[in-house]
Image 1: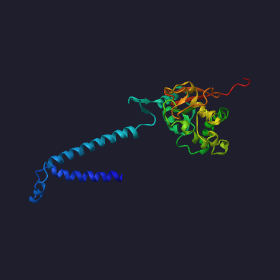
Image 2: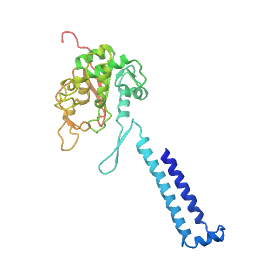
Image 3: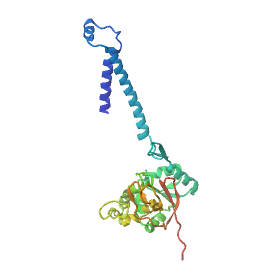
Image 4: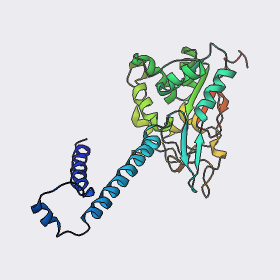
Length: 291
């Protein structure tokens, strides 16, 4: 802000000085006329300078408007990107997923997701969520984090406890969207392990032996078999996401996933959006006895 104010003062001062020379009809004393006679085409030079400054100021106004529209005004629910030829592509997966939830699930369905998307699901899908941006109960958020960070059998117990019908995750490995649930996963682990019931969840268990958070073959077995990993990467091992890369190549993490060949035991895939940004799973019912 300080630099903007100083720049404005400087531009105003220069324009004031040169604007006086644009109109030669103003009366000046003889001494001033004598001094000015040493400068040829003074009025023309002042006119060119004022015109140049006006052009630069107008250009900067258009530039600021463009930056605002591109960087600060893009909604988080509709994403856009540029292709190699400069054309724009729109990713409308969030609204697609919420519309599917609204039209294809019971009105009393309960959806489990990380808290970031709680308000959106409530407003656009009109479905009950477990946690949202206003959840103050750390124990409740911790249980959701524990479910995401646990293997399927343990996660299933938590989901049955919370009466979960559907689970929603955000996955950006296909389109390169870095604000997905895999990149947020360590926070789920930390919050999940912050309460007594989640004391068994240790962040160190999700790192590789070298201390890295990896999703490839060098990744931690605990990570490669937890519910979040399986929901994001289910069937992804068959997908070619980038030319010249093997199937199952995660464009955000820049690695081929380490666990490709698995099936889901307690969940079934209900819906995956066009660009795989949103994936929705239905929680299976309890198995009949004797089966």
